[in-house]
Every structure is written in structure tokens, then in C-alpha cells.
Image (cartoon, rainbow, N blue to C red):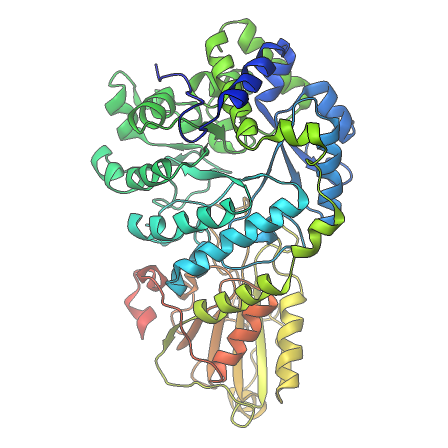
Length: 574
């Protein structure tokens, strides 16, 4: 059994008054309120499409006593208004989380993107990493969020993995530590707590835990040398929370509990030997553990929901991420306490860990003094000049020329006046967006302003037409890959709009062809024939403008690719 939480030790370091508030608050909670503190609810703007929720935000707080809030969508003013309502309605102040892995854009629609993990790695700059955390923290604070479910501290070892392709900060433990520690330090300037993810580590395989149990196949020795070093670094740096992934670590589980059969191997969210044994005892983590989203198949395929809801807490998680059905999940958790699946000691310890984070932020003092809620004036930092300057710097440093083997650059309106654009998209209207016309329209406008004549290819047909006619009509081809997707496939690759679509790069020897990816970094796997390839990481305006400047030779390419961009294909380098 792991040691119980020590609220006077890191990462809490509470004084006597803060500890007293935790203990007094815990003593005053009913069983229902103790159960509620374990839950994180996802609030929506408008109808709750996931659960058919019939309650208002205030009614959810009053009826289910949730300890942590998340939300989906919304502009900064909308989110701030919602979060103020939630704090006003809650007896115990709320931890309010956002997913800011690359800037304030993870907290609101109008937040400022700085750099993803992949773009940060390409810059080679710890200052960019710090800026991404700094802007995340400032813009989160402006809306009233206080807990970041980022950075992602996974190690991208498998090039086929698109789950953390853009979110991972490197392919080695050293690089992940090098960039994620400054990220955390940057957001701490605004008093934001950190939850690192996805313990015990994603990036070694290609599958998505939204759809299947993830498995990290590393040996205990190699895990200690890689992911273990990353977690040790963040624990030493005072990280407050760890998000457990629905990822199994079978060889370590069986080392810690040799009696486990293969059939008994569980994802970390349900594995006491990993949570209580490895993380909290062996690595000495004294903070709070939260599950990854509980609708993911890596968890739901393990056993009945009625069983795994309380078992996650019994195994060592301290908070449960998202309801499926409010009444049903609450009843499952409460029954788990009443039946002894969750002991009173384990329930109290989990509550202390969550309340301790609230005490660390002095949320109770802010609530009492009337300073907990945010104001419209706080929103002035969102998209401010300082943040936009940091965004432009990250774009300049990060955009990466991976290959230019025919020396076809620079693009220019004299030699390449007539540009044919091929827009490759992933899921249109998916959870994470992508594939809409915004980026395409921006390219068309900027190219036109710079003296080019732009046409857009219709990729829904196979018809290519005569090649000589194509060369007479087109001076350069520009392939814009905006392949963004989430949770509908185990990994994402280029999917042409139809079989043998005319957007496939058949034209690379007919006209100079330039391919730019504004998301995933490994598209050369599907386009090895392309001779000029650029990774631009994100479809925001700063990255688009910087990409065009670099294509035209107005600015140098400064980003550095990692070896995974070649996808183990020798022909990708030709």
C-alpha cells in the first residue's frame, strides 16, 4: 500500500491553515459530496450531445457535487462566463481544467496558438517551450481555468503513431524533459497547476486508446531508462497531477505482480501495481492521479462500467474523468464505496489529494474574498501583442524544410506564376477540427496578393487530362496537407478524395511540386515521390504566412526535423 498523501510535502507544500481547511472541508462532506469530489464533468455550450444531460450547469453542481470541471468549445467571453457560473454555484471551489498543449488555443476558440510539441522540438528552443506554457497559463487564468491537462510527456518512438505525433516533444527522454519542464515553468507564472500525461506512456505503438487498449511493450529496464526518467524529472519539479492513460505496461505489471496472467493485465487506470506500486510508491509521486477520459475503449473494454468506475479509484486514481450518464455513474461510484470496493481510507486519501490542490491555489480564500471570479478586463491578454509576437517567433523558428532534392525553391511569381493547389484534408467537422476552408482561403488570398494566379484542384475525379496541356496551364503545384483527425481511426494517413484521385502527386516530374503539412509530420510515407516537402505543424495564420515567406526565400527555414519524418522509407529521401 502506498503511503497516504502528505499535504505538507511537495507538490502541495501546504501551511497549517491550508491543511486545516482541507481537513475541515473533508470532515464536513457527506458521502454524496465525497463521491462528487472524485468526478470531473464535461460542460457543453448548449445541448449536451454526449449524455442527453437534462440539467443546467448549476443543477449539475448542486446535484452531483463535482470536484473538477472541464468544458467543450466556446470563445473566451463565453468560457469565462460559464466558469464564473460554475464557481458561484459550487460549495467547494472547483478545479477547472483545459487542454492547452500549445498555447491558449486549447482553452478557447480565440486563444493564441504558440507551438505544438512537434513544432517546439523542431525549433530546438527551450524559450519557445516556455512561451507556449506562459501563454497557455496567462490565457487560462484570464477565463478562470486553473489546471492544465498538459503538457504531453509521451516519447514518440513509433513513426506510425498519430495520437501524439504533434503533441509529443521528442523521440527521446532527454528531449521530452528538455522542453516540457520549461513549458511547465512558463504556465506556473500564472498559478496554473499541471497534469502530465499519459502515464505509463504513449508513442511506442500506433493504436489509439479511444478505440482499443493501448499497450506499451517496453521492458521494465527500458521503461525506467525512458519514460521513467521523464516522470522522475517532473515529480522532482513538483508536478501536481498525473493523468493515467488507458495503456497497459504488461512486463512491468507482471514484474510488480508476478501472479498476473495475461488476461488480468489492465490499463494503468485500473492497475494498482502501476498506480499505487510504480507511480506513487516506487517513483514517490505524492500528488493526484486522474483517469484519462472514461468513454475511451481502452477502459470500457476492460470490464463492465459498473465495475471499473469504482475500481479506478480503488486502484489508485484520485479523480475520474467524465460521466457517461450522470445518475448511473454517480450511483456506480457510491455503490463502490458502500460495498467496500473503495475503502473509506482510499476515499479520504483521494479527496485529500484533490482538496489539497484547491488549497494550494488558495481557492477557498479567493472565494471568501470575492477574487475567485474573472472579469472582462482579464480577457485583454487573450491574443495580445506580446502573445502574437511569441507566436510569430515560434513560426519562424519551427517551420521545417525536410527535403528539396531537386533544388526547386524558391517559389516565385515569375517562374511559378500559375499555381495549382491540392488541398488534402482529414475529418471535416471532427472533434479537433481541420479540413475547413479557412486555411485554404488564406493561402489563396496571400498568394494572389503576392502576384500568383491560383487555381484549386478538384480531387473528386480521377481525370488527369493530357500532361502537356497540364504543363502549359500550371507552373507549380502546391500540396497543402491539413490532415487532422481524432478518435475515428487508430492512426491517420493521407486519404485521397477518390480512388486514384488526380490529386495524387503524379505531376511531380511535370511541374515543380511543393508539399506542406500543417499538422502531421510523417506524410512522406504516403508521398515519397514529392521532392520538396515542408512541415509547418499548424494551420494558423502566422504559420501560413511564415511558410510562404520561407517558400519564397524571404526568410530562411530554421526548423530541424527528427528522423521519424522519413518513416523508415529510403525512397522518402530521394
